[in-house]
Image: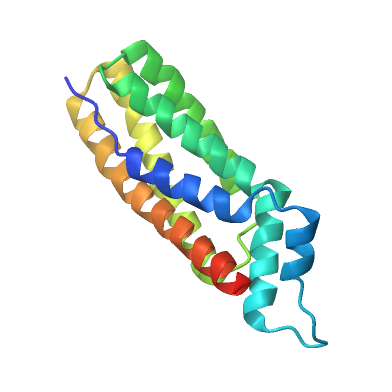
Length: 168
């Protein structure tokens, strides 16, 4: 029996994203604020994305990254009892994230919703696999997690494009 996950690339991408968005100090906030009466859409969008991150978005992303890491740990070597718990927690975290405020960019929000959808399907398959030892469930878990991680990576890339691109 094998359970495989694909979280390493997402963890790296999320770490890069947090560096770009989180921990803004007063000076960096002032520097990124528009200086004209009609701000450019890019600066406005960057400010909105930063606000989303600071108002809980970063916490949600950190929680998901941490939970994905726990699922990965419980998968290598396979720990069925641990997977039951970590996958149930991932399911709860995904459901919480789905109920939060949408991302302030259409592209980000679409990818975010897709990531959550696929991670939710992965967590459900993981829960079934951990309870039954069913390899087909673990295969579905892995496939869905891979798709969810691709979308999370795209979210991280887009956040970096918006926030880093607007800082120049």
